[in-house]
Image: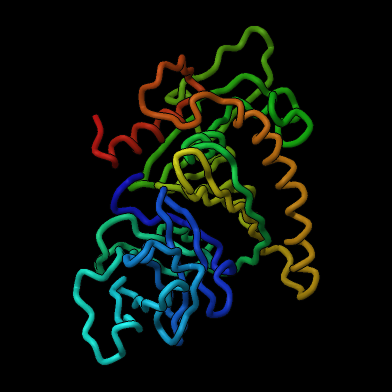
Length: 323
């Protein structure tokens, strides 16, 4: 995983009431809970005493209690009470687990994959979507590394083959460009796929004029993607890494063309059917790819149309400190 990045890891609605929730993200077992003031906390989900899962316990005041022997952990991961020793007994410093910085914003839970700090940058959610939109969504887990799931959404070549009867209609197999631009760690890629007349050659990215008028998508490092359908419709995905062979995908349909109560929720709900159908067209193929994770160099014979994938791999390797 890339260090010092905000990873979207959960839908905020998954943390219900004052019950702890245990998840595996970024290859780590985590327990999350809300304190009495609704503050969000996250520590390693393994009691330092006998190894029980803290997420199987309960939240009491601002602490999470181990279900085995009642050890109480605060938000810093420190044990503040060992019941068998009595409430008056001090707890040695060695009784602690790792704590993680988490924030709830835009109805997602974000985890800072770095040192616990107050100086972390702002959450890298797409600015245009931060207000004025409502959404509907769903989540599912794929048995692939998150790089594979992400690269599927960066792939502009597969549309007429995988999505023949949906978003790939028209048999537009010839791929001009695409044009790929970075702003900080946000990639925008412009798509110009056309039908093959047997004569025309694909244009290089540098040959495409007025590319900013083309259909385009964005990917924000390390795991956030959006399909810019129009000013009033966007599709957003968070690819939450579970471990080296599983990814939890949170897919949302954002819209602001329907704001009438009741109708708004209906539109958002029914969007899930088409989005799930299209995503499952992808899933059928992505699950066959080998290996299940990708790297900068892995023996593939890539083509011009794979430019967004190549750029993603290069930026990911750069952020990981790899050559």
